[in-house]
Length: 406
Image (tube, rainbow, N blue to C red; front, top):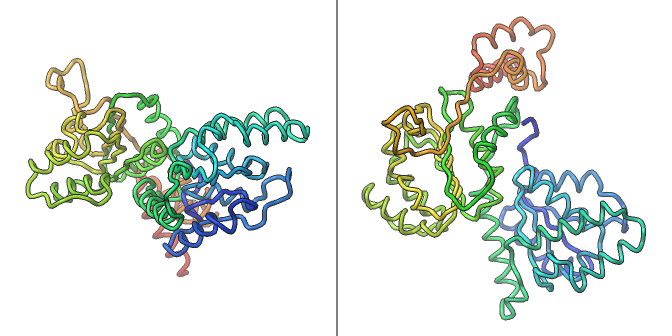
């Protein structure tokens, strides 16, 4: 995956200017900026029918979260509908989060295109400027986003707008903290591994799944796990990343897990058994996405995910480790693994020479291949690294620093 993980914006606000620009859209934008959230709003809607400009397209692509504000006139704007289609594309391919606000329309009106939304779609179709494919994409996007969990202001008649905006900002801050993990923007040969793990996970269903990623240190297990986590996070309301497990006190990890999933509400945990009891009681009704990174003992996993019943059905747990044995991978020939922990495990192996050289060059030269005067040195460095991504990144970065000094 070579697409940059950098996000110039964190939140993209989509709204019909005539309906909400000086009201709730402005209040949300101002409060998000005040909270330190990098929010984007389009202050200059293009004329009806004009193509989305490069800046706006980039803003959607580089945002982690989109918040469409569905007002009565939202679907009147082809501009807004194009934004919505782009959001859905990003959601389904890159884990983009959509958090809709149903301002003065019901979610069902958006989902099924009734009343104002039906009239708007019919009107666009009659104008003959938009082909059937475009109209169908708009309808599909409205249907998909209309079905998402969001805020329905019509069901909150006594809710003040200030209080509501505060709640949205709080939720966005929580989502930004928990649901997206930053990864390096110099990635090479990751797509194949990511796709293999997604096939291993399969379609989302009602069963809790546990998968392991194992391999020697420096192989890129954490990076790969983060990418899969980010891709899955859109489907979970509760997400938690526990890092560097082998060097962290277990009771601290237990408390972090509970407080992250429960929104910071967790009393002190005095011992591991107490922590296990708390996890079981507090999280059993929550469908969670959990990443346990760099575990090296069975006791750690036993303290955090001993039983699938500790979490609601449909939960997803990813474990990275250097030691395949602690995963208790199901193997029919081995009687000792009758009681299994993971459903399946994926072994991450070293990169081949060509991909290693490309990764090395990205860090050393900020390009996909070495500078001519450094070809020999680069080949030697790559051979020394033996396909280990971490070593390639470190040595490449060191060479980059030396090159700048010279």
